[in-house]
Image 1 (cartoon, helix red, strand yellow):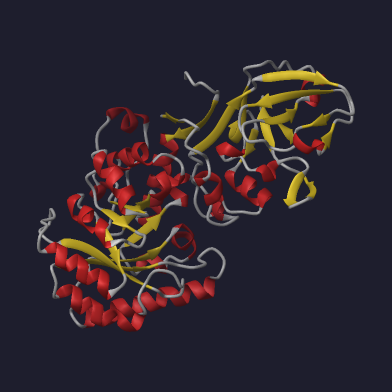
Image 2: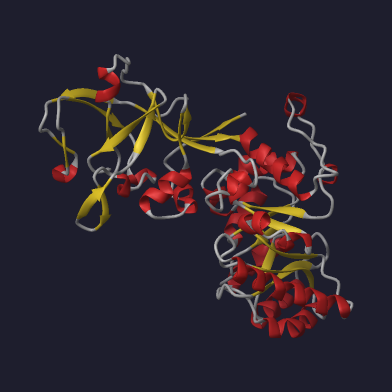
Length: 418
């Protein structure tokens, strides 16, 4: 690795595929016989979805550059192991994947706007979400002039079952379905989004029931829609009815080895895909009473060995991991971040700065553990017997795991391991 700065995000592609196959096995425990063996990994053989599927497909949510993991390398692995469908947030994200040669269907999960961007949906063979009559009418108008691979543009109709965001009222479904069927569009899917699948089981069940009712009513009318979907990672584990009754699951967190709720590991054995690493670039001994970093909020109580690491809040390492930690403006009190050095936890000290942090190595060096400039340090991930998870960092700073991984900036190179 030849970096101008020795700080990087490491992505374990084997962990990603492990998670994908574990999920597949949970979807179809009887028919799934594909294992991630050494022979499978080395053969380079593409595994077809039919080899490991039994009706319910997986849509891999790769928006926000695959939650900061890097979409294109992961999607290529997803394809190799039988991936069916992709979900992105915007037309732009879909175009990036198409330009990288990704051929499988791509659903735009976000709202499509402005209308001037609609021609690119056709040009790049993307599948938009529709949730209003004006959008349907504009796509229908354009569809007369564009020819997609299937001859007509596939769309997914989004229903608001309780999220309060994008989506039409359930009472309007019948009318819009008829409008789409009498247009140049193909109604490929109907779906909704769960508001609190990890926490509010009753509310989640109500949302699922609304989509079930819509499906039942359309089935009775003889309306055939290829896909119905509502399950996210939390619902996939806690609400089997969210996918057993339908035929597509939209998964993000679990594919990346992140947990949708605290005790999720007892429900599925996924492996974290992402690690965050750096190296010591400066090491020195300072006397007792020395103030460390901006504001002098940390003062050494003894002669101390302080290491400087080339990572800061501009890289996505939160200022709330300072030690003492600013739990609110002007309030420094909570214990901040820790990192792993030779498998041991050591504390971040002083405020996290834009490009650097300081850590206290006094206990390790006093114990006779040799540490030098260039020593590898783990901020997220495993080292020896030590482990720091994304979920731990999120809990420390009062946020969610999504924000931690999506916040890792572009100036951190992504290194892919197999």
